[in-house]
Image (tube, rainbow, N blue to C red; front, side, top):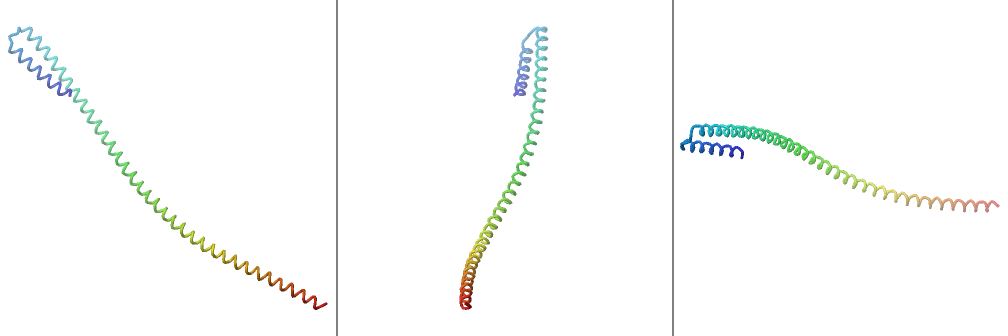
Amino acid sequence: AELRAATQELKTVSLERDAMTASKATQPDLLREVAALRKQVVASTERRESVAMLSEDYREQCTMILAKEMKSREALEVASHHQQQSTRAYSKLQQEFRNEKVALQKHIQELTSKLSTAQRTVADLQERVRATEQEAWTASKRLQQQER
């Protein structure tokens, strides 16, 4: 915008100079006008140089921002890749856990069934032992009575 303004000002100065040349002004007036025009040209040139420096600074800042953005995107892509790997690994571990849980539940059911069978067997054996002890006691009593 400043560059456009400086260019327009130069055009205006040029038009004014042409107008002054066309008019029949006195030489001292013309010299003052020329000095004023020179000052305007110097100021315009300084503004143009200032705008050019600002433009270069702006380009450098844009380049730095773009470089940072690219680094950020790369970091984001790496993080996204790691997240996907972690998600896959977590899913795999969850599935392994479910499989192992099912296997353990089956094993627990089998052991529970075997325990139940063993408990019934123990109860049957205890009953037989009790009955055998009862028979032995009864037989012992009979024997004692017979001996008397």
